[in-house]
Amino acid sequence: MYKLLLVDDEVLVREAIAENIHWNELGYELLSVCENGKEAIEYIKKNKVDVVITDICMPFIDGIDLSKYIYENHLPINVIIFSGYNEFEYAKKAIKYGVSEYLSKPVTAYELSEILGNLKKNLDKKREVEAEFDKLNKSYFKNRILIQSKIIEKLIMGNEIEEESRKDIEEYGLQMDYLEYRVAIVEIDIYSDLYNANEDKIKKGEMKSFVIYNISDEIIKKYNAGEVCKGDNNKGLILLWTNHSREFEDKINLIFKEIQEEVFKVLKLTITISVGEIVYSLSDLHKSYKDAEQLLLYRYLWDENQIFDREKLKNKLNGSVNLDNVIDKVILGIKLNEKKQIEEKIIEIQELLKNAYIRKNKICLYLFEIVSQACDLLRTYNLTDDFIYRKKEEVITRITESRSLREAMLILKEFCYMSCDEMYKQRDSDGNKQAMLALDYIEKHYGDFDLNLNVICSYVCVSISHFSTIFKNYTGDTFMEVLMRTRMQKAKELLENTSLKNYEISEKVGFRDPHYFSIAFKKATGKSPKEYVKEVRKK
Image (tube, helix red, strand yellow):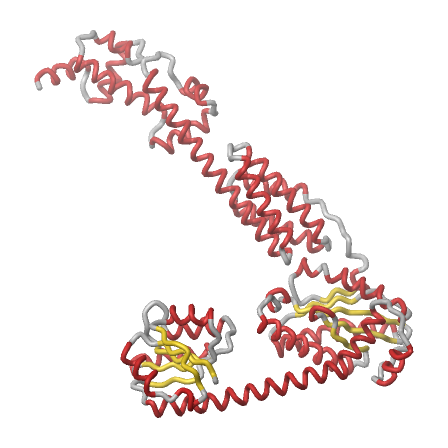
């Protein structure tokens, strides 16, 4: 029985289809019905479904997006869409999402039954093919790959060859009497994404490794270059041999490029291949293997689709690089909130590390130094130690666990940008506090004859230029404009509410010279102090 899910927002349609189709006779079990694509996705996440029948127009998530979800998540579910006449052209867009069939509404029980019957035949054939493949696959691995892998694995791991193994070498046609040997490791670049705990993905991963084995074996045999076997954790092992050293070395890169191209053509996957040092006896194969393992670590620098050949990289590996100057520029970029500069320098660091073939552990130390300096900078902006420690530990963990240099540099850039933002917010916050302190000081000391920028900047502990910027940003006016406005307002209040003389009011609002006070007052109000008093009294 194939498990089926029905999705339609119309109750009558759902009920009609559910009640009028003889599901069991057609080989299906109607698991459930859903009102929209959102419900369907939640159901699919929790239950095994083989077939989905869905309307196209529904609230929340429609049939197209439901099909897209199934397609993009590589779910082994066949989709049948039915739609109203007006939406049928739109439904055709779902072809790229692997929809099996389209039906126009209204759908008759006969039409749907016929479609389901044909689909069952296809599903049955697919199951038969998969079952046969599994059978052949097991047989093949047992009879050739497994034994051959064991033989070569023993050689590569440095174990002594028993008499029985020698007979197997002869029986399986493994000719191994050559002048030079090398061991290569083949590994799928997206290994950790393909082979997680999901059982279906593990099976797919094993099938892909099997295909890669066949491709590699065919090409290696074509060039009579060695033998291929299946290593641990879906890695491929290639034992290379030759009696013609120089000619063979020239050929290696071409052979592996051909393998990479064919794998990508068939599986749309990239692989990385590392080739260990040359050894001159079977007993030393383990040295070449260990060397290939070490070379594979350099994949961290380039992500994917690389060939690491010891003979070609001898003079490039374990290089050194001085990053002091460029690290200083990254930190300066954080100080100045120059994200473009940060990005440019991080790209420069990435290229320097790649070109010097720096190992991951050393790369991490360089990046940790940048993180540490950035954290020191954050401390100068009064961010809490708890916040800084938490962010530092988080980014160090992420960099340590990164699978590629590119990923690590993106994590670092994200951290640097975060540092910029936190410092900018702190600067903005501190600036607002200083501006408010200045306003409070003006309110209390506007009557001081000597109140000026120097006095106020000394009070709030910032430079004149920095204070002028933050004060203007906060108030919209300059310090002198705010001071003069405050003094004039206080003068008005004194003129309105007291009988003080002009010179007395002048002194109280911070003017030594009564004449200058009168000029300033008239400029601010359009009237002299006397004219202002007369006008107020008239009212």
